[in-house]
Amino acid sequence: MTTTLTLRSPEDLLAAAPVVLGFVPTDSAVMFTFDGPSCFHARVDLPSCADQVDPCVESLLAPSVQHQVARVLFLLYTDDPARADRVAHRLVRSFRAAGIEVIDVLRADGHRWFPLLRPRRSVPTAGVVYDVSAHPFAAESVLRGRVTHRSRADLEATVAPDPAAVTGVAAALRDVTPADPRWLRATVAHHLAAGTVPADDEAARVLTGLDDVVARDASLALLTRDSAEAHARLWGDLVRRAPTGLVAPVAAMLGLAAWLSGNGALAWCAVDRSLADDPDHRIAHHLARVLTHAVPPSMWDEVRVQEDPAQTLAARRPDP
Image (tube, rainbow, N blue to C red):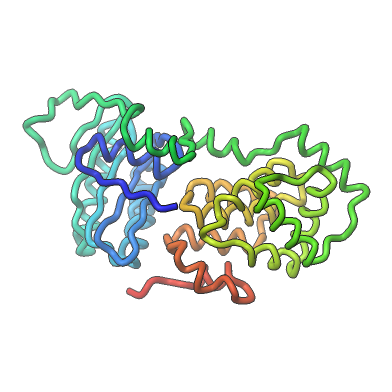
């Protein structure tokens, strides 16, 4: 599902950020890109000290250059004007030096917004009060069934373990039988089509089956951009129910599905859970590189049938 948001005012920008991120940002630098072959949005933690500013700027500039975007907009979420000014100055200087136009830079503290790129006679020194809770962008997001969480912590909580559910699956592991690739693919396909989730015994078999590369890839072959949201619901349920030691593969599956459905923040949360369970998990590391370089979901169609699609994606770089 593709949603087009037309930004005509600072209020539109402030309303769009939580919708596209999936949560209300705080202490963040949010970037929107325009006029490139593949445009994207990005969020990074706002640097708290001077030594962190250059890495922050580079993490936003590098993918912008790679994707040949022509213009960018920045939203800096903080109630500290000096902190925002320091980052804004470096962003503007670095992006202009790279030949990318900075359309505007705004600071928002959750209640008021302030222009940072240039003074505006119509904007009082105390800033402009805003409330985007009833904005059309927010309403449209609700109608489309997309949840906007109150914070990134709330989003992270959606992939956290459910202790009671984990206990149920762990108990079922005692009697689990090996899952061959055909069974795993058929079971995943069934639940995707029905919009259901497996019972504990079946969940235990699915989770152990994902440890087998051939069986996992049989399920991965079902993942398309059209089915990504259904995959995210299925794997998201199983991530919350997975016992320690079985989290990494299913969290990586969730991350891929979230990325394909346009939910980069959820994809990062899934990567974090995967690597917390297995710091060396290969697909999670590949996906982290995909997200860092803002590889567009459209590339999945080109690599899905390859032997190791996640690795192929991670190796892709947009032409300079």
